[in-house]
Image (cartoon, rainbow, N blue to C red; front, side):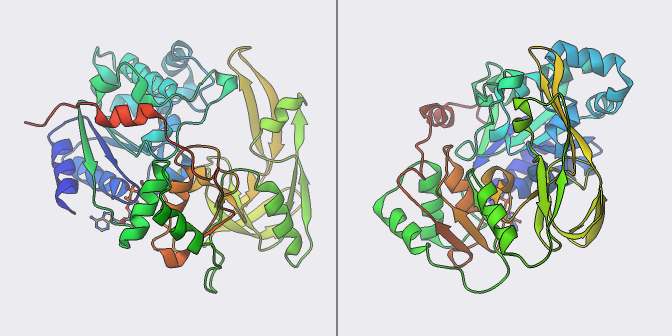
Length: 411
Ligand SMILES: Nc1ncnc2c1ncn2[C@@H]1O[C@H](COP(=O)(O)OP(=O)(O)OP(=O)(O)O)[C@@H](O)[C@H]1O
């Protein structure tokens, strides 16, 4: 580990709450795993979490939402505390909180203010201690120049950055910023990722991106992250594949327009050999965002090869819950898969990849293109297509204000 990585580990062992920052590829997730080992070795009960299924798998943890019981955010804080205290289905979440000495949250840029405050409140209430997070040591890592939280109208989550919370500075007295990029070693590429993440596009970076429009050298299919509108691309690629397609039609209850908010399609078309992504957390290893290939299709189940782990998946239940009406407003039973010839950039955050083909045509959030480019180890393994003047979105001034804010210095 480099000097600042070692410093971060040392300070967490001393018991500090810390936020680890630094551009893509500086080793934040790597250090999170080292911190987990060190603290566990010192006899602490350490919970490692991320803000998405894949981000948490990357650090061998679970999502902070499933750790704490907040799930999709359908309950308000008091309702959730009540469930944690009285509902047998929430016992494991209550135990997670009661047992935890330290909580690590990776990829914190995607944690909304609402969920940050909710987790803090729930931990404090369940631990019965009048200390932030009930006295649990909290270590967070991420890069606010990467992906912002996703707003959710149905649960009244505006998707505000968690650092805007009034208690954020009280929880994290200290910050450590990593500034040595380890994932990549080409200086012009590192600069370009940094520029694009910050929403800037000087001439040299633009030229580098334009040069990366060329096709990748022959090899395995690249991972293809894009902003949105990848359904048509996926459907076309499936049509181009050899083989007979099979269609799984969802069984919907409360059929209404909210069904369109479901993460699984009404009609799921698949072929043997097609790439798919799991869209539900099923176990600690089978998480939302995991990719595999279809190897068998039966009437009501699909077998997927997830990196040599064959898993048979039947229909799962997906619901849309309205926190305002306090009830489930749509229910769908479907195989928990989507096609993944192309995936969203949100599903790719945190990964290190050898071959990446970024579709820059439908970028809609600041930091998105930077996250997609930053997955590649080098320029050789990266292609950028459909780059245009809207592909780079300026960052919000509040992020610069947060980074410039004074944190407490270590003694
Ligand atoms: N001290 C180290 N020794 C060896 N490899 C390292 C070290 N630090 C980081 N790496 C490697 O560098 C790559 C990038 O690290 P990592 O994914 O932790 O970065 P990150 O800052 O979390 O990136 P992102 O913000 O994009 O999620 C990984 O392949 C990781 O294993």
